Amino acid sequence: MIRSWMVIGGVALLIALGANLITPSDVQWFRRLRRPRWLTFEGAIPVIWTLIFICGAWSAYIVWESNPGTGRTWLLMGLYLLLEIVTIAYTPVMFWLRSLRVGTIIGGTGFVICLILTLAILPLYRVAAVLLIPYLLWSPIGTYTTWKMINLNPQDA
Image (cartoon, rainbow, N blue to C red; front, side, top):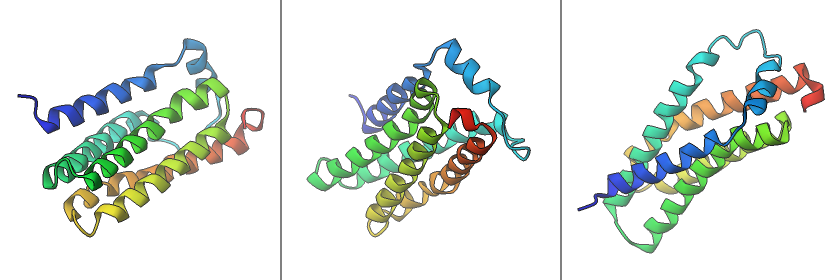
């Protein structure tokens, strides 16, 4: 029997693979960009996002298992799905358009979606809401970093 955590994890993994829809020239564009001097933790970013996605999937699992199959739960699962799609879209869309401004907008949009989702689940699923805090803390850092890179790379705004 397929368990809900398998479906949630599988969907999350499938969507996460969308971040790989980039070409070597996309990566080359991003690598040549200037970064703020204080950005010393860039190598840790993939690990940080992996942990955030695990927390998000775990949060979705808690919500689903608490009230499976209801209209409200499906709506919340839709918000989780939208949040992951927007978050994963950051890299390929910003790379394809070669636009740090687009990356900043996508990053900010992810934060807003996560905040709405957190507030929606907080009254009923406190642990699930707490598991979204890493996203709410980290997303503004990533968005701010991208925004600061606009000043350093105005030709790629």
